Length: 208
Picture 1 (cartoon, rainbow, N blue to C red):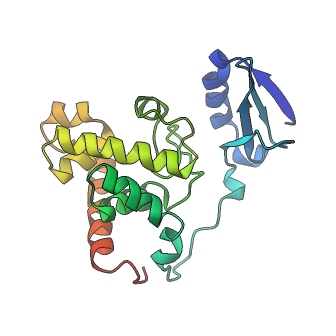
Picture 2 (tube, rainbow, N blue to C red):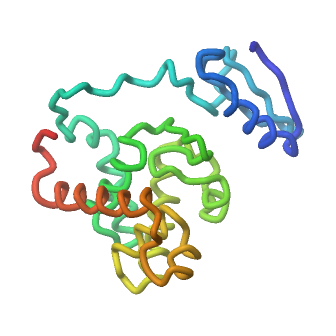
């Protein structure tokens, strides 16, 4: 793929098609919206207007194989943003870091097979509700993710477990089940975030 353009109504249809294509079939995909509302895609950006839209799996950094990883190396680029928006939304910085760690492992270009994007893995609907213009922009993503996390905590009266379950499975699922939904993914998610929450609170410079 070199370059093509689509109107805004076709963007998400194209997005779903790209998700179904094997990652080895293309490199990173970039996009920008011009003054006429036309969205342009390319794997070979020719100017600074293009922003990363989808990161190829082949360009993802390799996972460590049993090696010790110092979280300081992962968090240092985002500490100031986490501090800023944790303060703005009255959140524990350690909680925001824990969510980022579990959601994306600090990969600002992370993209799930369900369409969740960026550091705090915002789905398009949530990103729109939180006024996030570019979910792959670290500041925009952390702002929106922190705001949404605050809303979940408020909705569930400060119950961290329920707020995290809602962040993962949606607040309606938590309300419907009157607690953490009986989904293995959600239950594991809550436990992982809580583990890293304690980790960040106690010793953020220790090695995993």
